Length: 180
Image 1 (cartoon, rainbow, N blue to C red):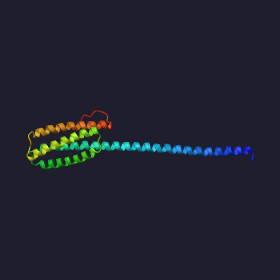
Image 2 (cartoon, helix red, strand yellow; image 1 turned 180 degrees about the vertical axis):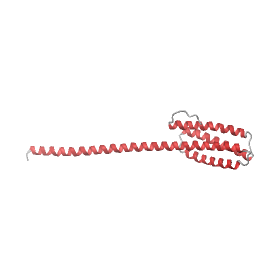
Image 3 (cartoon, rainbow, N blue to C red; image 1 turned 30 degrees about the vertical axis):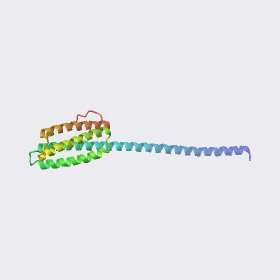
Image 4 (cartoon, rainbow, N blue to C red; image 1 turned 90 degrees about the vertical axis):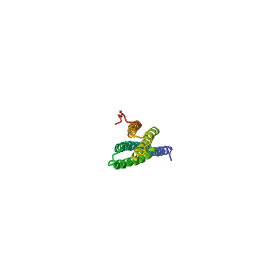
């Protein structure tokens, strides 16, 4: 065989192999790029879902705290009004139970700063609940009175606003929060 024919044959084989390898390498690079894009898209979806879960948790905690405070306020107003008390007691018990459930779930999800504020609100709600129940049962402790309960409820509204501000800051919500 002539050396020119062998060289031409080897050049042709090298050209075909090079062309095939180029296509293979291009396909592998495209697959790798597509996979990375899919991973980035999934990470974004996961982050968005996590942010939405946190927002939902914050909304539930804020709402349950507001309902609990409103029920405490209604119970204080119903003291001494026998016709109003059964409904106010039932509403207060329901609001308390719901808040406990929401708070327990939130404890597993909240960042430390928000958790501290939520714990302070929850503790304050429990303290006012105890005072209101003692007033309702006719067994008040020194310092227990409807006026003291109203003052404590007012302070808790302020704590709830602080907790909501912390939640909004954590979510990156812009603008001022008047608290109402």
